[in-house]
Image 1 (cartoon, rainbow, N blue to C red):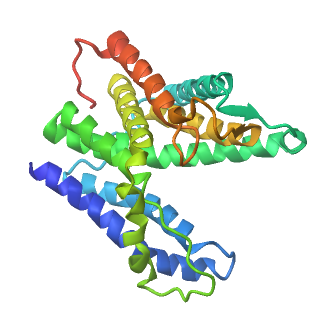
Image 2: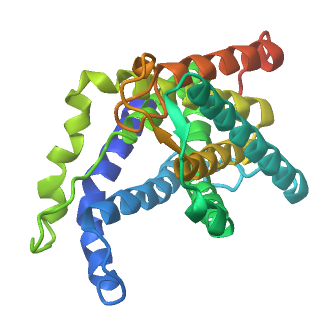
Length: 295
């Protein structure tokens, strides 16, 4: 129970301190780039999550490369990461294929920009996927997973980390009105509004999709005892989402419209069913009847 409480305190600290810490970062960056403050807070929150998860490991006297999920040889780690990326791309590509076949998405009629900038799109998508995958997996399937597993067991660990992983994706800061003076308290002032999506019942399909994805990534972590493949799968999914976003469009009014979330028109009940099937198959093939220790 003490471990769970400390875990919840950690999450609360990250969410409440990040808006404050975003201000000094803003002061540094404003001399070089005009970056929206609401987006900056989101990025600072992600970095704070990584830093604070390290403190969490130290608190439990577990701070190490292995506890962050970076175990095994570099060669095997890189091989697993690349395998994971291919798996993540395939998972999202098949989902996109389903959406195209059901008439929920369509290939964009004018792809001149896409083909002429394909290399740049690919590089940006890959970098974004790897950065997001590295940070989020180091936090959720790395540091938090290791510390919670040691103290509570795999079931509680998978449940808590997957729930929080899904929930933080709905922490969305809104853009500030033009001309707003940014101070130390600006981030805290807009924090309550950043929780607005949690009052919207229509997020349930999107939330459950991310929850099941978190469970699937946790099972991969348990089987491999490191986060290499988790990073790869995460990166591959993000990368494929960014590329398909340039390649296809959502078609409003489809008879299967209920299968996608109104927020991104990609994830939803269809992706939930797809990931649920993958999670069940993965469980039965690799983990059923085996020890669930993630260490």
